[in-house]
Image (tube, rainbow, N blue to C red; front, side):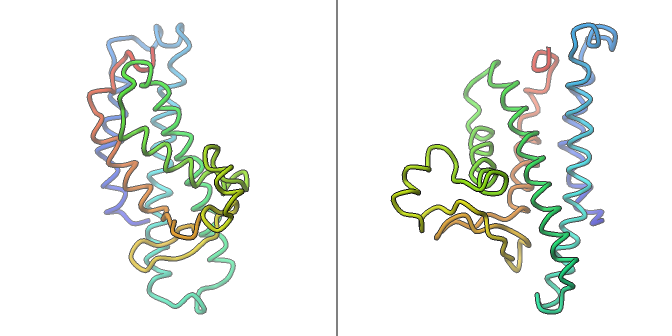
Length: 194
């Protein structure tokens, strides 16, 4: 695991843990049926941070070799774990957005991030173009692909081609998720999950 990368996740993880530092007791949260929400969010983010750190290390190891030198099973595992990380991270940020949208609907950075993850999630998980782009994609299939095709960017690692001019890396998504969660500290309060 890339320890420096995992350390970079500490700020968002500390801020997410502040959710658990609400004035409510554990008993009050359990009674309200909300303790599991808070626990899930922290545990899921920690798991995603650890997996991201491992995937970044794998990206770096693959970057040191040509793709023809990389063991095919190793590459398949890397692609699969990257895809699963992306789907898990999408669910985390989507759930977070739904919780805070009720408090203040003007979260443009989070809304943009959910949309960016959604653009990739649809071709990864459902093998179709994201909702609002379906009609446009049916007119011109070259603009938006229904299947995300894996690719490798030398500096950013594994990513997916989802359109003629659209390539998104998993590391870019991870960096933006980290940044987004770090920036929105003031929304981590008991009201989000109560």
